[in-house]
Structure formats: structure tokens, C-alpha cells
Length: 312
Image (tube, rainbow, N blue to C red):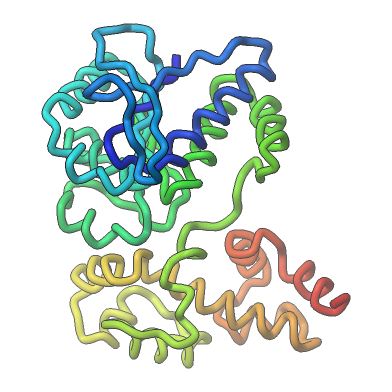
């Protein structure tokens, strides 16, 4: 059984997205959906949109094998609820697969389930998360992260990506693909969440590391290591890496890759320069390395973007 934990002012799609994935996948597998919405206080639970879901209370039960924890504006109160935290700890002790969607990671972290583990959350809450839970190995650019039986996903719709990955594990890749097709979604989304974060403003960067990013953009052909960036910023490598993640929501190496891929994309689409030469001048060096970066960022290799630009 799939359990979906909600609380007052939860984000509706955090719950409805995974519920729809598991429902459709179950029917495709020839089984009746087995999904239960639960909450610390049973009854109608109002989402931040004003729409209510009817939830059951926390009951000692061995029926739930997977527990999805929603996020939303009510996370701060939910993460202070002893009943909720105790329930999560008990479920984890039983070996239940537990996952968070978006800011639901704060509830898992408050329960201590993420200590020493890899995890992710919405890019807008990276700084707050790092400050509150330094024991967690946060990976801010991931769509979702799995560390043993504990899963976490990025902002809102990423809960659907996480649910599809769980379906693939439970029912097989073919069922997951069919479910994604029925939902008119990508089976596996390309790229990390820095595609959607404030790092997209790198063309005119602002904030604490704006000057550094401007400098890096002018020196893409240099080996822009974390150490080199920290030296340019006048900071120790360790302090720089942590401060950079808190400020931008991604790692220095991912930021440099994003800068390189944006400049390379412009050259690929607007010139006839050889792909190998574009890779050299933008610091990728190896065309294959650039190809992989393009697929992560745009879901397509450089040649496809060039053909589309010329056709347009």
C-alpha cells in the first residue's frame, strides 16, 4: 500500500502527482490501486489551494510499504508535530520506503531520517535547508535522490519523477514508461533543477557571487576548478563551496557547466563553427563531454540543436 502523508496547507500537486502515477501504474499492471491519504489529525485536510483531501489517522499498521511525505507552506508547522515525527521514525524503523516531495524533506530531516544521507529539496529552500540541517548531504541540483530506503525529490512536479522511478523499481520499466505516456510526461526527465532556478540569470548575474560568475564567463577556456574559483573569490575552498550552494542553489562545478553550455549553445545555433572547436573554446575540451552536458541541460545533443536552429 502507498501512504501519502499530508498536513494543513500542503501543496496539492505534491500529493496528487504521485497518487496519479501510482494509480495509473497499478491499473496498467492489472491491479486495483492501493493508496491511502493519512494525516496526524484524520478528516478533511485543507491544501494551500483550498482543496481538501480526506485523510485517515496514523494507525499502527504493516499495510503501508511506501510512504510519500508532501511539502508545502505548512511544512514548518508539520515538522514541529511530535506525532508526525514519531510516526515517521516508527515507519523508518520498520524498513518502510519513505520519500519526500519538495519541502517535505524538511519533515524527514527534522525526524532525523536524513542525517548522513544524500537528499534534495526545492532549489528556493536550499539555503534554509543547509543552515538547519548541516548533517544532511544535500544535492541541490538533483530532480530526485535515493539513499537506501529514503528518497527525496525537488520542487513539486519532481514528485512525479520520483514516483515513476519507484514504479519502475516495483513493477518494471515498461509499466513506468506506459504510465508516463498516459500522463503525457517524459519517462526520465533530463537535466537537474538548476535549469529552473535563479542560476538561469547567469547572463546578468547578481548577488554575492555575481562578479565571480561574470569573471568565469569571460574565462571559460580556463580550468575553472572549485579551487580556482575560491581563490578568485578570496575564500577558502570549503567555505566557498558551501556559501556558493547556499547562494545559488547549485554547486560551483554545475554553475560552470551551465555557463559553458549556454555559451556553447549560442555558438552551436548561430555559427557554422565545428562542434569540436566549440567544445575547445568553451572549456569542455572533449566534444563527448560537451554532448553529455547538452543532454543534461536541454535533453538534446549539440547537433540536434544546430539542425533545429537551421530548420527554423
